[in-house]
Length: 279
Image (cartoon, rainbow, N blue to C red; front, side, top):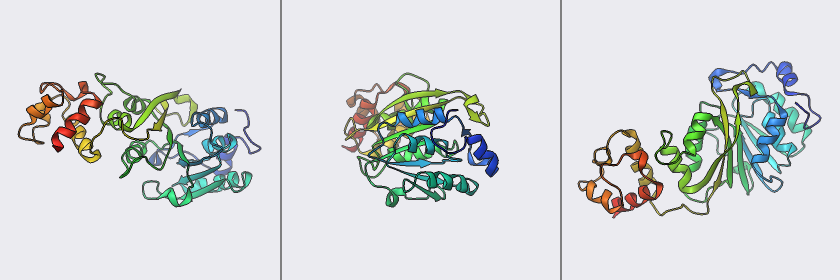
């Protein structure tokens, strides 16, 4: 656990501030500063970027981001017990760290950030997927962020990068691949965390595309995909029958067999079907 700055090791910080991780907040602390710096590097050159971090906890990844040269970090933390430890980091990096206490699902961070903006976070497990979907489905595209570098449970990470035909393929993979390049860039075992979770973790890097890969109305596409995968064992002519009286004809026009199931349909085909349903 080599030092990345002059601050104490994270175990000492946690002991000094009595920061036992709370399951109710989805907390699992990553204490190895070598690892947190490595995660920060997956976000790319941060010297000209502001970085949004959700759930910094005692500040392991925060220190990694700052030591790797982030221009400014905005950290949103719900657990007020962590604020004194984060304040010590802010003192060590004058003018480069802003800490907000509150719920990341309710705070608009944009008034505190200056573009270009990237997001990097060891997301609390209990809100990670919801935050990702929000970031992938803004009212306008391109979004406020250039890239997302996020840690998830390995199962969630695999769903984000899944390909058609796999069991993990579904809504998350389609939303991510429609507007982003997404890849898993790191794997972490349970033992890397305190306390160790019951599952392995992985870091996913998503780079925003200038525009979606294929034309489609965003809300309609989301609705079609959600309906298709809510009944993924059904043939699409049955799963989507409520969307149009002539759903079989529209499926065929989009290049999809009515007897196909959602997990075999590509992003391009889902976008084509969405356009057919708009027509």
